[in-house]
Length: 154
Length: 154
DNA sequence: CGCCGAAAGTGGTATATGCCACTAATTGAT
DNA sequence: ATCAATTAGTGGCATATACCACTTTCGGCG
Image 1 (cartoon, rainbow over the protein chains, first blue to last red):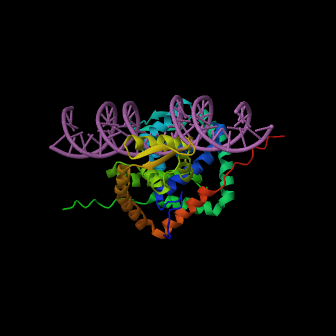
Image 2 (cartoon, rainbow over the protein chains, first blue to last red; image 1 turned 90 degrees about the horizontal axis):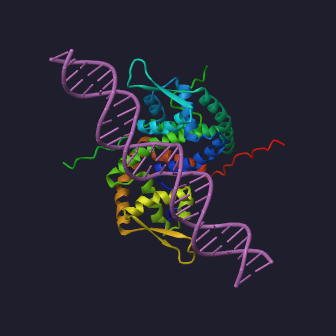
Image 3 (cartoon, rainbow over the protein chains, first blue to last red; image 1 turned 30 degrees about the vertical axis):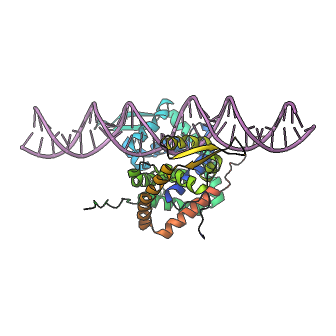
């Protein structure tokens, strides 16, 4: 056996990705902890901030999130008064989201904390390496993945 | 402005990672759906399988998971009869885990489904590129990340 | 105008994960 | 042998995410 399974390493792209996501997630979460925000919430607030009163669907698409998952994730942020929603004027099906002043302040606060983690991480792995990794990840995220049609026996 | 925020792209390594993890996770989940397992459960069963009746802590460490999170994630698998636990003979604090015959069969079934997704993904991005990505991710996961000590003013 | 199919969200349910407080079992030092 | 410190897990609580079944709106068609 030249190929025993080293504990913790997997040939599964998905497993490897999740594993690293857990690791990095905790690091960024730790950094953001003083703000009371999780990494995901920070990312969401940021997306809303740059999105210009984006519709739920637009946010979900940008973050590659399920729309209903987004709805759930948004709730604590609404509850805590960081974001508010309102119906689109031209299409009442559409719900738009924006930061409240409190939310903007909280985002500003979190960005400072995030910067520390971001800098620290890039200091360890190298800014270029990090940019390359993000590029690869964005590329993967953009793939038009489809399971081969389940050949119906015939 | 040469640097407007393109919706969906982020300079945050964590956000980018999670975003791609969601995307890829859904792909693998879809592939595994016929088995009734999620990607995470598949990865967990696999880890248990190669771990040789591993202790909870060993699994958690290998997968970089919180120990309590592992406990929670394990529950549905125990409930469905895929894994069973037993106390270590020499240290009753330690709980070991193993696959049941049913669980082994389910894993075998899932591996076939997983292979389809894995092949499909690597066909799109290239096997070498995928291996390189996994290597980078494992490297990131292995980093000794630490927040710079919060200089206590002084 | 009235109806049908598409589009956007909501709520429920289930898994995924993390932190914290707490219990049980071990180990080490005296 | 005894007791403090450490180690391994558990349970509760909160967020993260997904899928599915619905409900409300729209947009287009006859």
